[in-house]
Every structure is written in structure tokens, then in C-alpha cells.
Amino acid sequence: MRIAERQPAPTAPVTVMRYLGALVAAAALALCAGSVRAGSAARAREAWFRISIDGTDAGWQRTSEAADARGFRSASESFLRVGRDGAATEIRIRWELVESAAGAPIECTVEQRVGATPTRTRAEFSADGVTARSDGAGREVVQRFPALPADCLGPAAAGRHIEAQRAAGAARISCTTIDPASGLGPVGIVTVPAPGERCWSTTTTVVPTAMTECLDEHGDVVRAESRLGIGTFVLTRVDRSRAQAPLPGGAAGVDVLRRSVVEVRPLADGLLSAQRAVVTVRARSGPLLPLPSSGAQRVEPAPDGSSARVTLDSSLGSAAADGDATDARYRDASPVIDSDDPAIRAAAQRTLAAVDGGDSARAEALRAFVHRHITGKDLASVFASASSVMRDRSGDCTEHAVLLAAMLRAAGIPSRLAAGVVYAREFAGIRGCYAWHMWTQALIGGQWRDLDATIDGRAFHAGHILVATGAQDGPSIDPVFAGMVMSVGNLSVEVESVDGTPRARGDSHTKESAE
Image 1 (cartoon, rainbow, N blue to C red):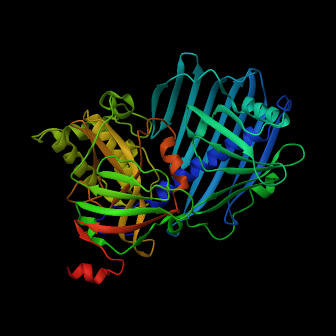
Image 2 (tube, rainbow, N blue to C red):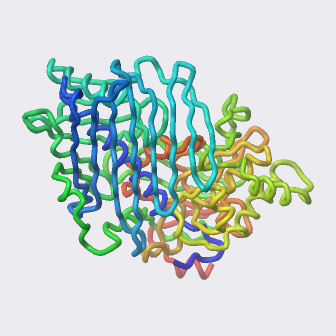
Image 3 (tube, helix red, strand yellow):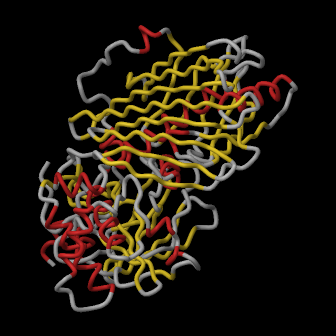
């Protein structure tokens, strides 16, 4: 796929891959917690599910639980294949967690592969904190996180708690547990009765989109369904052979790229060089996920929550919160933003050796370096680590954003990732649209500033709409980004003005080009 000059490389399928991975992980958590019958954890149990999107088979999932010498061992393994611009992307997630008989997490292992980039994390839990060791790109990153709260249960204990509450006739059940595939912090679960016999609606703090679970007479999940903007995500309980049967419909499967593209009216190619713009963002159904006022963006939500008026000015930043400048999440290396990699540190030092200026000039020099360094501007990579990008010199916007964030941290400038949509002249065969995208924010002079390393010749433009920011400080996708799954395929944008010039719905590309 050729990416036009001076235009960002949208990542619609790549960002969406990560969100779908988070949804798969959340489904595993819900299934583990929702299908364990009271008193059944003493024996080994296993369940297989076939995954489909809008009726098209897309993968499988396995959950299991068994007694362990230290208590109980829960496990999940998932496989998902979806299309992206005619090619197939595979998501594989496997985790295993050991908890005490009382339900306290002891240790876990998580293996994830999105595209060609595998990661493996081993974590140990104690009253003093969580120690995680992540292997990726041929090197180990060791991190420490705060201890889990005392009321945080392992998946087996959470399942027993939910089943006991259901048996007691509770109308609303909540608990705190851990989802290893989505991070090493606590995850809240809330489940309430749903329409239908023995059906429950479950949400988590990782992916707030509701998942409806239908149980059989024994209390085991036989079907789970979640309605997303890109389609209806369904898990159906089957035997192992049916779950792992070859996927039909060719190699690519469901094309999430086209389904995730955001409609825009009117065409506004001038956004790609604009400093200022005003747009209205609407949810196609349900409430609009709250948009942040951060970096170049200021947001005025509509009273009914269905839309928001967004003003963008690429020359502006936003005031950082107290403590952001010293927050280790924005300064330290992580498994993805591995700023302590020797090659990254050396490149940052070389790039800045001739820069005469403050952090703004230094950040722009690093942004321009990343743009030049990544010569293979394509969709071949899927959220590779910064050190892998430095070595391979290829990727789309996620790789640009991750490498720039790492180089900024290596240079002592706090950074974080920004995700949202960006205007494209043409993407996935669609003329004039917004595509899902990722870029970088740098903390400079007490303000968060937007930097997009996919752009040639300028740091940023008004064609971006920010949906969320995150430090990406753990081995799994930042929970802030995972929550965006409910917006993918559910947005539309109307451009009100570009650099102060009002846009009429009937404006054409031909007219704009002539101007």
C-alpha cells in the first residue's frame, strides 16, 4: 500500500488489532469468571469456543481451570484472524495464572503475538508489589508495579464469587480481579441480569462494552455476544475440533480496515496542511465516548452526549497535570517503549548533538529523525517495540509513535502515545475519510505537545482528532486504548471550518484543489 507524501500513514487495522486483542482478553476473563460453578474448581475443567464477527468465523478461544498445589490454576488461549487491506493479521494470546486457595494471585505468564511481534511476560505478585519480566525483541525488561488491592481475586475465586451471588438471587454482582492479557493491575467486573433465560450482561473496566453471556442449566457459558461498531462479536461453545476447524472465506477474513473507517462530510483535503480546524464528531449509535481536551485539541460535548464540537490548533499544547513531568510512566522504559535500548540511546544522542535550542527544537529533531529512519512505511508490522523498529526500519504510524516516544524518553523528555483518527485523502479505497491513527505527545515547557512522525516537513496538523492518550508503561495494551474499542466503527465527522474558512456540506474536492 503506497502512502502519499506529506500525509500521515493511518493505522486503522493496526490500532484496531490491539483493541480486538483486548476484547478477546476481556472475553476470556468474562468466560473464566462467568462459567465456574461453586465447588467445581477442585476438578479440571475446559471449555472451547468458536469466535465469529457478524456471522463469519474468525477464530477460537479455550479456557480452563484446575487444582494446583498452591490453590488453583486458570488459563486461556485465544486465536483471532481478521483482514486488513486484503492481508490477514493474526492475534494470539495465551495466559496462565496461579492463585492461592483463598483467591490471592501468586504468579502468571502471558504470551502475546499480534502480527509478527511476540512478547512473553512472567509476573510474581506479593504484598510488596508486582514484579514483571518481559521478553521481546531479544531482550528482557524488568518492571515493578504497585501491589494488587487486598480484595483483588484471581479468576477462579472471582468465578466462585459470581456464581454464589447468582445463586443467592443478586441483581447486581461486582468484584475486582485480574486480567493478565490486559495488564497487571486490578480489573473491575460488573454483571447484571440480561433479557433471556439465564442470560447476564457483563462489563469490565478494561473494555466497558457489554458482553451478554447465556448459561446452560448447569451455569456454564454457552454463548457470549458483544455488539461493536465493526460488527457483532460472538463466542459459541463447541468441542475442540469444531473450535479449531480451518477458517473459511480465504486468508484475510473479516476486513476490519474498511469497517473502521470514519465517514466525513464534506471532503476537506486542506486539513492535511491546516493549523486550525473545527469539526463535529458524532456517535452513529449510542453515546459518544468522551473526547479529551489535550495537546492541540479542545472539546465541547453536546448536552445529550451524542456528539462533541472539537477545535484543533496545531500551534497549541495543553497544560500538564501536576506530577506528569516526574511520573515514571512517561519517563521510564517499558517493554514496548524500550527507551533504554543502546541503539535508541545512541541515535538520540547523535541526532541531538548538533541541535542548538531547547526541548521544542530537540523534540522536533527527534521527530524528523524517526520520519527519515523508518523507510519501509507500510502495514507489515503490528505494534512492534521501539527497539525492533529501530532495527527493522519499517512500520506504520504505531511504529513511528512508539519509536519517537522512546527517543524522547532517552533524551529526558517525558512522552506518551496518542490515539485517534486522522484525515486521509484516500484510504482502503475510500475517498476522503478519517482513519484510526497513532502519534506521540511530548511534555515540553509544562505542556503536552502533539508530534506526528509520519508527517514530512511539519510536526502536526489539524486533521487529527484525539480519542485517548496512554503511557503504554506495561507489557500489554494500555487499558485506556483498550476502552476505545466501543468507538471503532461508530464515529462520523463533519468539518465545520479549516483555517477559519467555513466548509459547506456541498464543497467538492475539485473546488478545494483549485483554491
